[in-house]
Image (cartoon, rainbow, N blue to C red; front, side):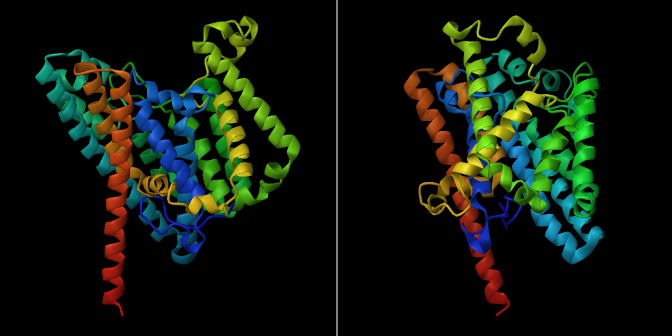
Length: 387
């Protein structure tokens, strides 16, 4: 697949300029899954892919982010050179950093208000906000350093670091793509073996998403976005490869189901379990990476870029969310905690779980629709000025 489009945070009309709508579609789906997964004791999050395989929505989000970043800034590099393109990438990383600080302050205010209003300090502990309430001056400084993050906010700092370090990687991908990908792979291997990571706050913690490991998936996405996916097209067309991918997905499904379904409890022999466990999300375990790659092979085979359904009104809401990923992600963090509070303090009935999950997704769609409308208005005004 060879899409053309924006970074996914600035909207463009579906299907315009040969845009690969699958990128926006699956990033939007990943954002919905992340929102649902962030609501504890919610039966609706059983529909998300984390319950049916080793990987989850994070792999989708990171890969597509690397793909679109390389695709957009790669063209900019050809037009404007290294310095201008690097400045644009770093400006975008700065925007993400500002969004993280804004989200941090508002999110902690939301948590603090709930803790005070219901006199239940367990919320602060559950959401990772105890350090902020105990020593806010230190916690705020650590947050500015990206070392302190309440629960559900780990993806954004990872994205900031990956994008902020992307200028030299993009330059290398444009010149020696395969060698750059191989170097990234070696760094991932070293990380999974030795386990080095960045320190977090409090001091006994490390980053939940290890950027030294997750950089490989981001770089691989960039490699694909610069033409690597076309070179891998023969794999998607190979029946043997697709069959192997489907087989791995089925094995992964059985293993994951055995974790929570009693009849399959002893499915994985102890000797095998000693080898494959733990399936680390922090260091992007090889089993997680393979599961994502297998899933990508099957999805690309089943959903071609010119599939008419991609331009249907039914999928448009998900695509719009993917086109405004930053805003929708931040909004989803607020909504997930609000839903968690309602389920805990008011009623946790099954209808309420469905209602809050559906309402949250509707509100995320509404925000993306508002941003899309505003973007069209701005473009129309700009077009009239230059006529």
